[in-house]
Image (cartoon, rainbow, N blue to C red; front, side, top):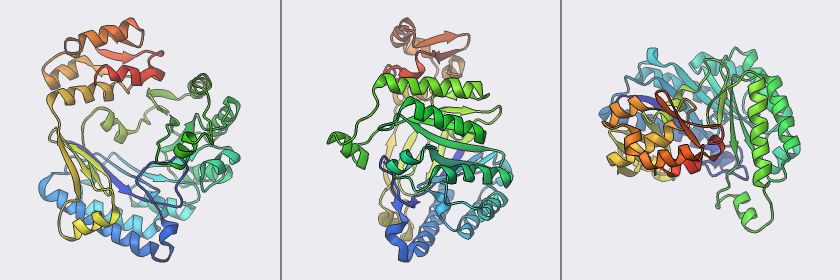
Amino acid sequence: MMIKALYIHIPFCLAKCKYCDFNSYPLSVFERTRKRLAEAYLAALRQEILLLLKDISLDEIETIYMGGGTPTILDTDQLVSFMEFLKSQLNFSRIQEATIEANPGTVSLEKLLALKGAGFNRISIGIQSLDNWMLGFMGRTHNAEEAAAAVSMARETGWENINVDLIYGLPNQSTAMWEDTLAKVMQLNPDHVSSYGLKLENNTPWGRDYSNRQITLPEDEAVYKMYESLQRILKDNGYIHYEISNYCKTQKTSKHNSIYWQNEYYLGAGIGAASFYNSQRFYNVKDIDLYMDSLAKGLRPLEEAIDLTLEEQMSETMFMKLRLLSGMNILDFKNRFGISPIDKYYDGIKKLVDLGLIHIQRDAIRLTEKGIPLANLVFMEFV
């Protein structure tokens, strides 16, 4: 199986949000040396990609995704220069989609034009909410007006594939507040919407606050109403629900993320980045100093490599593909593993069908409408 996707992790951001568990560093901590640190990290990234190229063919790469953190916190010349490096190493004629993540307040008309000219053709903007009180409470560094301006600037500078990220189920969030954000997002008319229910991790400020009963979360019934509002409003505005948390206009699916959901091979570069190829998962070190020190010595900055058993590969393929509303194609699974998923997981599939959480339609196993918000219960049958 060929490697189709390349993920590049830029770990820097303006400030850590109160719910953030990502591997990121607020650059304000390094204010005096921020440009020098960013340059050193980008040099290490280049070295990692060159090391990967010694052992792995990247000729079949179809998608690039630069995530973080907030990649657009870097200077325009740094980002453009890094893209020029990628063009010198990859067969760029094959690249169908090159995404960069951005946060409002870190883009301008000039930067957006330069990034588009450098080869990025999709932008993912972290809006999260369009309620100014909620944005402040979350620890976001932008307000609703700046978020709307970022989307408008992207459209004005010719971007034809704009995603916005949203979160619901936030502390003190009501369904009315959520629907107000959705109504404002629909006025911005993005091409793609990624919307996630909040999941708190213990090592985040909100996670600690929740454990100490300093914040409360909406009840499950209220969160489900927010999910129903999301479904209804996006459907009414012409969006296709194609993955549990993702919606798009026609022909605007995320090609890069779809490679993950199809459980196909991909490479990751940068601190904490993961790769999957040759039936193995690889994880880079998460510490930025250890990452750069390893590469300075000419060593790949690996923390762990895991050989996946055939059972694990089948399991992961089932629950990853079931994230897609197109479901798990029965023949694809059989061609890949030599057995029908119905034969392999007969008891679990029968149980889920009886519960109304999945159904078998023609050539695929799919989540039902009832099963989509209960998908984690479905996935447990295949673990």
